[in-house]
Image (cartoon, rainbow, N blue to C red; front, side):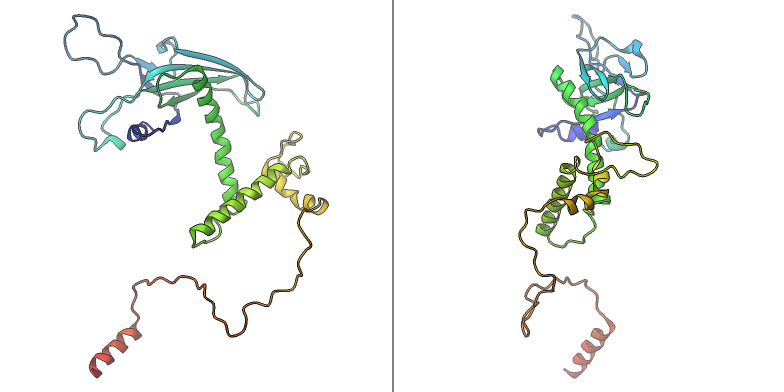
Length: 274
């Protein structure tokens, strides 16, 4: 993540990611005393995420009351950076390794869904000088990441976003918009669908059905609700292409660069005849 933040430093992009709870980060270098000789320090003291004794007073501290997690408290330390080494992504880096500073955020909530143990979450934000509003936005955006990941998984595995082998980019865009429209219908039908849950699933609260559960009962909703569409068209197939006409929208065929044995024989015969 720090490597990507360094590569995108000249763009208006800021990254946010989660850190392991056993990481050791570095604090900024304290002001240098007058008259001190020698090489300036590159890093400050250690900040071990698992050792509260190494935590200085945070620059930002916020608390927000939520309906799902209870009280959510966040603490942020500015200009915290990791110690880089000439390994992995920095193996071929020329010169001294840079110091990539950011904002370290610790988020703690009172409870989690399913009576799980609410362990603190450590986040690293590539921006510095974060305000209390930005700190709250960071941990709230990180929670929304799970919703985005499950949404894309639902698009691919249930709605068949990646199933068609589409050859035209415009057709791919139209198919994507159709998938989004189908997902929007499932979201709008949450209040109308019955909870057809599997035996091992827990009952969902009223009005909080997931799109997958709404899809199970969507056929019953469609049969009982009206449709603003016009009169249905005949069920018989259309006349098709007029007799004698040619298909002017053939699928593109690309040469694979393979020569068959028959073509080589014909070329040899033409060469001998010529």
